[in-house]
Length: 153
Image (cartoon, rainbow, N blue to C red; front, side, top):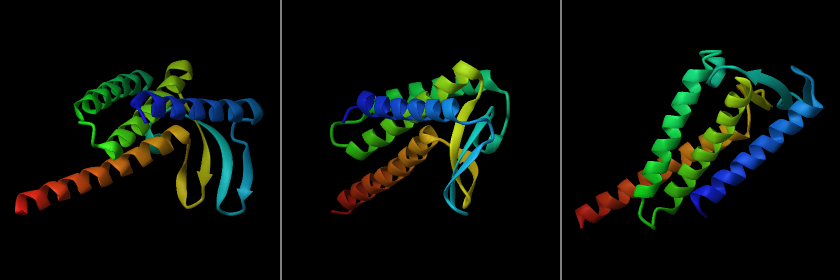
């Protein structure tokens, strides 16, 4: 799949889910999905992860634009073979743009996924970023091990 297609799917799902939450719930409202484990909780996060650096919207927008440009640049450097690295970067791009849309529109990010085993409430864009980072680390590790194997031969 292409960078644009994966990123677009992430953005659409992220923005649609945030719209559904914001239009059907009150701020701070929580709906039990699995008792003592998973809740849908509507919050607005004006900061970064864990609410750090609240109300620094311009800073976050600038950093996100830089990250987006770096992702696109790195993606273009990859040769055809690096499928998982491509998917990883596309997920990260979609997540970054999904949260960027929120920040530009309202100065905060809409969060709603609330697992009791993980304190901060998060959203689909955050999930795509984390999954993308995990794929990137795994793919990078696998590629570096492949290179080491070739060097030993």
